[in-house]
Image 1 (cartoon, rainbow, N blue to C red):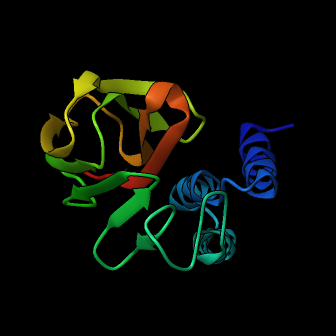
Image 2 (image 1 turned 60 degrees about the vertical axis):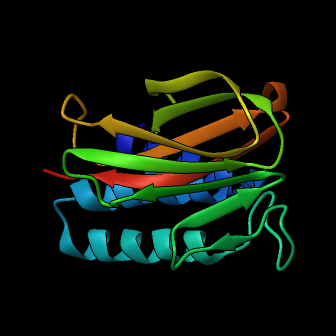
Length: 164
């Protein structure tokens, strides 16, 4: 099985498990690297459909799991996460808001789920926190910024794209 096929199968399994955001990021990465125009178009449509469909932790109202795609905000059980700019050329800023003090881990993962960069780890007070990071050492492509709190019981992720 080719690596492209393995990645596509992985994304479909993730979508079935409810992690549509990571599945969409994998498919978008495949679309960006495809040499075949028709294949790329189909993969882009699949990535868009996955991104728009409800997934794990999604909700139509309320704080827990609510999202606002137009503003880039993502909220899950006491965590509000926004990242700008997206796509990222050199540096990005994470705006993180916590409802309660917690041990927080923020990491950047590639589309295969491997940790590409640990951005922050430690105790944070309730309220707003701003973190800046550079991507000059990363290959262009799709990544996920994963934020975990309360020992991993609460987490949220946001897809970002690194471009040159």
